[in-house]
Image 1 (cartoon, rainbow, N blue to C red):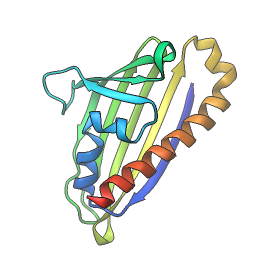
Image 2: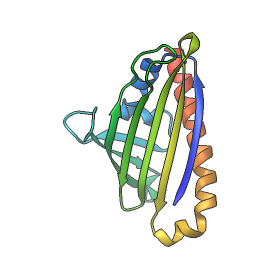
Image 3: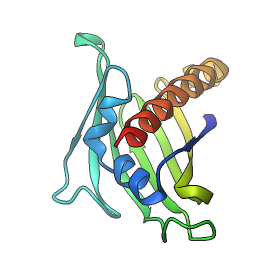
Image 4: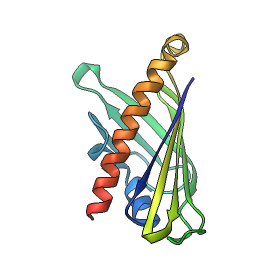
Length: 155
């Protein structure tokens, strides 16, 4: 398994940032070489299903995911409950899960913390490549959160 966490303070409210994060197709704006499509009737809440298609041409793969925890932020003031979302990844290439929290901060800002806990197939590859997967994953998701922050802050 490869596990890493990245965080980013965002100059936007927790509810605005949460809305952007759970707009699944919008992730393609921040994640390089990735497009997302919702497969469930509803895009929100526990049980929502979506697929991230990552890569180029024949080197692309699907990363199907299902939401298992859905708790929107309780407000935008410090001390209000943070938003929490957890998903399970059940694809042929990437397995495991991801989660994020959106915590309200003073001044109408928030902090996003994103955790990935994944295994890449073939599974024996992750055993040896976990440090590299972690390094690449951490850098990639840090860039993703920078893109999210730019997007939400400009809105």
